[in-house]
Image 1 (cartoon, rainbow, N blue to C red):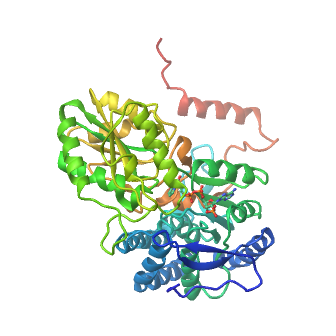
Image 2: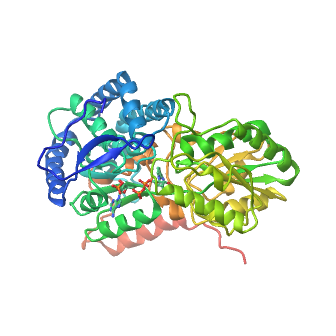
Image 3: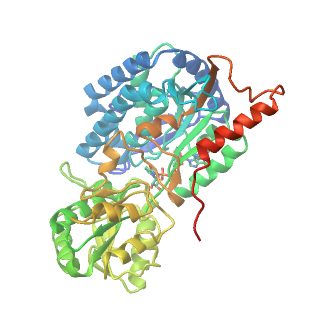
Length: 503
Ligand code: NDP
């Protein structure tokens, strides 16, 4: 490996990470056992005690220093990402840049969002001073996927750290080198204690992390694995954040900028070879602009090739088993009466999949209902935007979505059941650190990013402090009939004027 990462001890069982471009071994990594994971969590406890004792500003200083180290070595990080996922260097650099922005935001805003602040104590408790603050949970376990091995796990890690937690991170078995790189650079700026550690291995190592006594588990991956994670965490009432799959739709209205919509659709569907949780997988286009939109999309897609070349814009499919899923969705779409106007079954090669645009695909096809995770997209004609909204809302998922419309962007965005919507852009919400990121339905629950993402890794601590003796002693057996009468008067004054509901 070109990156300076920690090598595994010689006695341990190991596994290899492979280049999806060549199949060559990129690195050899330890398979951490349940005992190893438990040890890491124990070490993290000490790290958490120390890290949480620092002030927000002290933690922010370290996180900012970490972002500085990562920025200066971003080419090295992009190289590790490229080797393990196959994605083009430029995409790996973009991913790292966006993640850096999140680290900086979390560091800068943690005090304001989480620090102690006063809240109103209300008339009945006017003698109390009420405050709330958000305390770190302790040790947070993070399980990450391979498709964005920097951006995605850091969406949990950076926010958990900024909130004062220690982190034990289990990266995907396809991208362990990226995980080590992140932890090694953090260790350079926080050498005192085990505040951010990595454990590697296969699914069992992730399962062990769920059972290792962490105070919260942040999972990003497929819906199926998310269910297993939740079940394992339920045994110990360990709370979870589940960031799972998606089947994101683009809505194209009759007044949309069609060129921009086609450009965004193509990038959203085929960028990172379609292996994006918030990637575009379906498009619903208003009848009056359908033909023009489709011809623009096909025209732009024709020039795009996935190949093994230094200037390619689309890399290989990182996880070989996904090739069969992509083929099966295309096959199902064609079997059910759909047509490929670009690509098709022959677009699926041994390592690369060429852009594929499918039309006339029935809504019940797996190509419309299930996450394909390849550079494919279905384009469907709708008579109006009501039908577009209904169809967009017609899957079990609800992660991201996109609307292209000049007049009705906000209105349509509000009607889509998804955690995030981009209007007249695509995937833009993920790059805005102050916006929460997450889904509904089979896309999971809980939020990373933004103030919600910081609070996700904390518990609310409420304190009511008596400032002076109460005029009305309500919380005492010494409460008198006179006090009861005064209470009745106060509540009548406060709430008695609410009008009765008319039938
Ligand atoms: P997987 O669900 O296969 O794996 C995710 C992680 O879980 C990996 O680290 C994996 O380890 C680990 N794991 C596997 N089995 C278990 C288990 N029994 N207990 C605990 N952990 C386990 O997802 P992928 O890595 O294939 O990632 C792609 C998926 O991630 C897609 O569905 C995509 O939509 C989703 N995703 C969601 C995002 C979001 O924010 N909503 C963002 C990015 C991706 P190992 O790799 O070793 O098997």
